[in-house]
Length: 250
Ligand SMILES: O=c1ccn([C@@H]2O[C@H](COP(=O)(O)O)[C@@H](O)[C@H]2O)c(=O)[nH]1
Ligand SMILES: [Zn+2]
Ligand SMILES: [Zn+2]
Image (cartoon, rainbow, N blue to C red):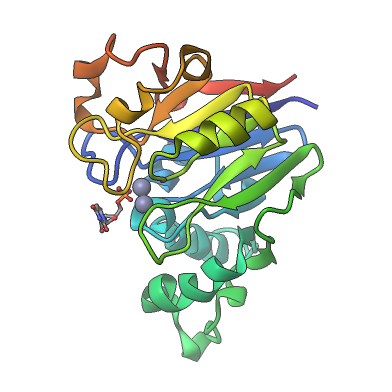
């Protein structure tokens, strides 16, 4: 079974010319989103994918550039697609805050009986650090990584071969020991803050300290509007662009 990942956006939270970093995992067994920021539904529209063609959504953390499109997805599934409930793949710690802290404001509607996240989505809880089959041939392991202190945040291993950082601070030991030495991941999609101090993301300067054989596996995402100024300055790492497709397995 072939497995592909298509970037729906590659921008940072404050980018104005780039869509939110999110991805569509495409296989013969279905389509699954990794994150759904506020510009993700527009990106899906641009590649002619309708909400009812999405079989599930995996959420890494609850910043708006990663979950801000969930309200539109849920309401369109409700009103335009006969209340189809797509699956929402979440860890317990994300599930406990996503509705109360983020979605409830716009989606709580007691007069129509919509008072819980389960009224809109089929919730599938994922255990941290436990490989979980999302679709036949597509397994995800969500590992805790540091983004904003004291807030739950996850990076993903896909089929134990691809590492998708979502938003995370630089962690050389994780990339070197776990991602490359132990699991020998051939593809690494990593967030990248192009300039300034890396308080909550890996910076380009930090990623450039990695050995060349690791850099060669890295595609940079979650970058700013000024990405063009950095072309040719990313060592052996490449920028991945919106709607670009990587074949993860044939
Ligand atoms: O230093 C920072 C920068 C940003 N934030 C908050 O995070 C969100 C999303 O930003 P990401 O860079 O995509 O994580 C942003 O809207 C800010 O609210 C922060 O807490 N600290
Ligand atoms: Zn982000
Ligand atoms: Zn974030």
